[in-house]
Length: 80
Image 1 (tube, one colour):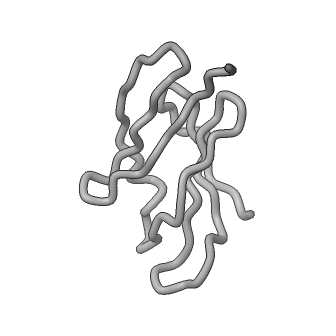
Image 2 (image 1 turned 90 degrees about the horizontal axis):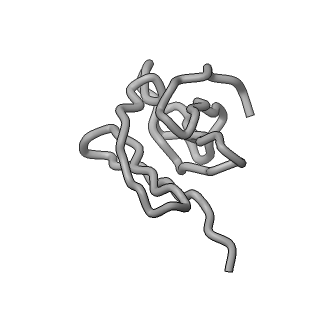
């Protein structure tokens, strides 16, 4: 069985919780993802990147992604 990295969003703390394939877990703050009144719709792991999918509060679907490395380094925001 292949082990994969997983991640999820903690709304209360505005943090991403990550579990690496080795079993190591850690969290990092992702306030850039919710800047400007955005809300988080989900988190997606793409290879070694973590995408936090966001959109304007009250919208029906995400329109932006905030990219982070597996160590929590912010890599920028772009439109979906």
